[in-house]
Length: 299
Length: 275
Image (tube, rainbow over all chains, first blue to last red; front, top):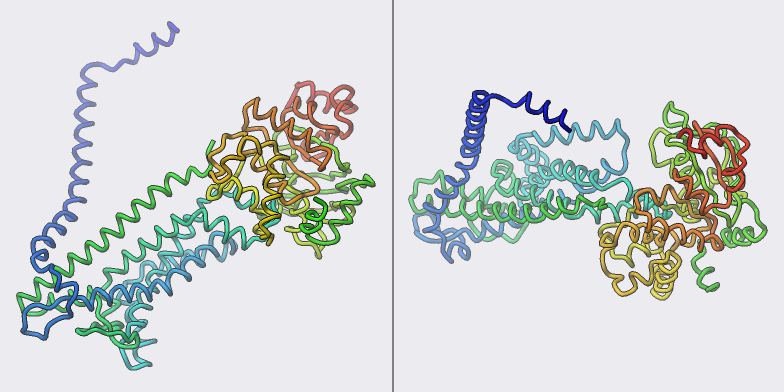
């Protein structure tokens, strides 16, 4: 015991050294604090501007009316809000099953070599600029059918979702401990039932989180919709026809020469931003539970 | 009881097998069994008969192949990629590696309990016990209800959990979770129960309960238990096999292994001189 004390006291730093160290420490923490501030500032700036410019145009009309003819004041973006929801719905119908099943394949089936290439392609697809997706869908769906449509817009968004969901689903499924698969196999349960009734169920929250993140990502996409969904100033209930979408409407209004439309564009942006913010808050809420559950292996 | 049993029996074959038990045919006949993980040979030329309705303990130092061996008995070794095997294992005279036989069929007949308790976290106590039956297509409420109580009673857990079967399986204590896993394995009515170091993560009292449980189960089912705890093997097994470096060194009555081992390596191991 005495020996240990001796060693410690021998290495006790000098006062000078301690002061230098304290300066270094506070310098680094200041640097980190500044970096954090720079990261967070734009978010508050964006929110501040959107509220300042857009809140005045947010009224009941905005949510219940379609745009007025050019030159008339008033009107709203009801058709664009519903249009955006429709497009997201179509995107989910395509993106969620393909993405989740692809993720299941990567995590539960497949072999190392094939999986390597699938992952590689999914990562490349993730990096494809969204306007390229718009062009691809334009050439394979819009040109042959000779019309812009909600289908084309939804499919373009869905294609963007697929690689995002595949990768996330795989990551969440890999986190499910191997011991659960073994427990299922040892009971003589067929492999596919283990995957769908036990593994997917265990990872549900993580998968749903990934889907919401993908929805948040596509909900603001404008480029792929420019020549697929195209936009529409009126109600459209025919999915084979051009449909309005919030980002498109914001884009159209923002480049118009009218003050009133500019305000509406701000309001539209505010609504879009709040929508994405809400999705992100739900994601945070769910993923907190995932973090808690990933201590799956208790004891 | 018998009616239900025949209802659940997956096919006529397993009924025949139940008769075999009475004639004391060995449960497993293992001949010249070898197992490789990629290039590493985990088991080398193991030949052994495991008798019905006895508790057989597998002992040996870490890495001697005892877990590999027990996992081969219900083809769980196939779960690891890169495994290769040679030799034969017969379950009541039936080759378990035959092309005509599915691994799932063998695993329904040969249940397994793992080192670490692994109840499914999304399921309640009752769902955990019944998952093997449900996912194998048995949905009759009356059968499920009866099997639930039966299995939990066999696993000596019924009295502790009967009032809150809807609580999550993972809310139980470590020892209870392990007994829940035993109940889950017993619910599909296997003919053999493999236990891979079932007590190694449990405290002495929970261990004692599992050992008592093994004693009550031995009349109903054949048990193979891997343990690195020699006292445990001595306490609760009828026969003991000693493995070392992937080989079966000695196999005989537990009493003989611990009092008059024939092989000097066995003697050194059981007397605690290496391992």
